[in-house]
Image 1 (cartoon, helix red, strand yellow):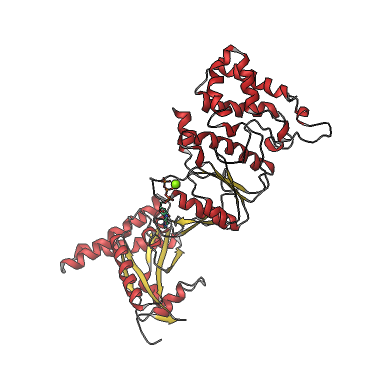
Image 2: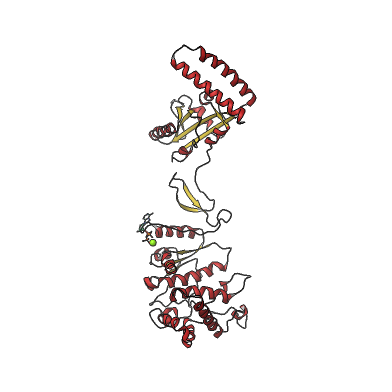
Length: 454
Ligand SMILES: Nc1ncnc2c1ncn2[C@@H]1O[C@H](COP(=O)(O)OP(=O)(O)OP(=O)(O)O)[C@@H](O)[C@H]1O
Ligand SMILES: [Mg+2]
């Protein structure tokens, strides 16, 4: 070792600080501010529990001695101050031990900083000294004791006598709490993906949202002002989950995911007035019901009521009942009833898209009943007007790992219908196999939600 101020090991410079004093009444976490800095360091804390019986005996002896000294004192002021300080200290410790049953520990704290740049190291040392000072902790540079302090910060339980002498402080059980070091708020899930950095301590955050032991569900919600980067961030998530082979479905109202889709070899499904791709909202799919459950039609009806709520506006109970009656009727037309067996054909195959009713069938039924005139009128655009692409048999298969549903062409007013349609179909994809990890992304979801709030 050439320099008393630092060690050089494998091109890194190491320098240590020894905590030599601190306020005993400190109730804050002493090391919190240190751990939250983004400075490379190792901290070592040693505690040595003292024998209570012996400590109290020693203290009592000391109190007696110093008490006499103070009384006899006609020396200079400073001496009296120091003596009365330790005298009161000793009394305080003895009281806490006797009355509050606390234990006395010897405490040693070493902080070892390192950097590949000597100037940076010096800068950081100053910074840490400043932080500690402001927290009422006095430190001393470990000049000429760099090696001992370095060893003390290795996980080998080596605290040499020569540095112990300077760093030893008394601490009671209650004070011990303030040295608790495990308070860093870093999140690092083993199989997680990179989410971002922690704004408090710059640590990297990795989250495995599919970890059911840790999280109740895998949902996430991204908030931010316009232009803050929500969509950009979502694209990053898509990219990272793609690398993990997770199936992803994206509902894209602003046509901004087509590039990411193309580059990750996904498929894009476009619906709108100019597209030849159709999805029938009245489809009942085999995967709509999870294995072992039943009630295809009932499940479908409740979903459809949600969809028609968007079109017809808020319905009262009577209207809902009426609509439900008509929906049942339209499925009856296709021989689909509340009996789940009616969803299978003669050969026991699940009925295909061609055997499902479409909106026009419902429209015709609504036309026959004067009570449903209001519904009928509102359905006109969906059957023969600008939105008539809703009135078709489904002609797409969704079997890619990455699917982007482009609903941009629906236009601002009608986006919500597209969102609903795809949420429904993607949700069924999710249910297909619950063992598989999947994700649905709904950008600009407020456009769907606001329709319900109104
Ligand atoms: N981390 C980033 N690095 C570089 N550019 C970014 C980053 N995040 C966002 N951007 C850019 O900022 C712009 C706005 O981002 P983005 O479209 O994701 O915002 P948004 O929150 O989705 O906005 P809106 O609410 O309008 O949809 C885009 O041009 C995007 O490329
Ligand atoms: Mg956006």
